[in-house]
Length: 312
Image (cartoon, rainbow, N blue to C red; front, side):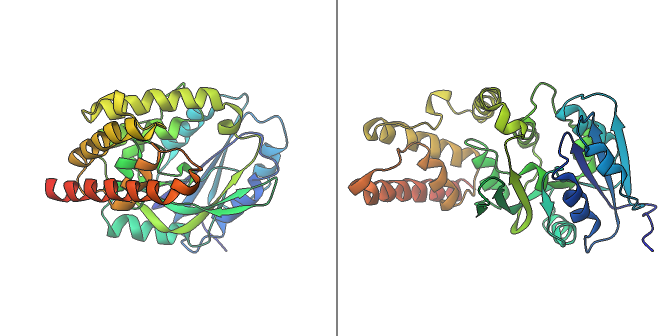
């Protein structure tokens, strides 16, 4: 018989809202973990479908259930869950995603052995409509993740595990539903916390039409751009250099300045991460010019990484 842990080391937090088609398998993917010293807290955020009934049907003593009478929003749900967590570490999983059976075991080992404050994982992306499955392309080191924050959200929120005190001390900010994770990574990076990504596919991130990030794209994009500008400015880099598609003449004038400045501020960025960032300045589909644009990208990335090594 499975008994609830009296002092769980990990608190797994799962907000849920109108996910009757997904929440059951998500819960089971945590209850079936090889690592056993955890609690799972699931919060139903005022669902109008069968989500609450499905959650309530699980009787595992490690599962704690919270039901709200009305929807309060994703940021409120995440912060409420963090407030209830009893473990030394918090792990997130969204109610429409799936965890690999060894996720908690392997991620805990990686987090502790590398002395990280928080880390995500590589993951699989499953498009529900088409059934298409893709592997994520994550950066894994702290320096690379900090660098990639300048162009994207380099941690997959439902794959993240971190020290509980990090999340209790810096809650998700209201008004950022759909982009609350990126805003969090910016704030944690500026506060000096140490990041990582486990180089193993430990969750399946399911993409479907009901997700907030799919429904509110315009708002999410606006929040992202505002926070990205804040992050880059905090590094002492001009917002005039923010990566965007540019003609090659303009690109060769501005893009190296951005990358070189970034590598001075964040020493140790890999050639691969610099290569990805520089690609944001280039147009796709260059035809016969593709080998030259790739050579340009690699050359600047390589030089920027050398600069970063010297800076260290």
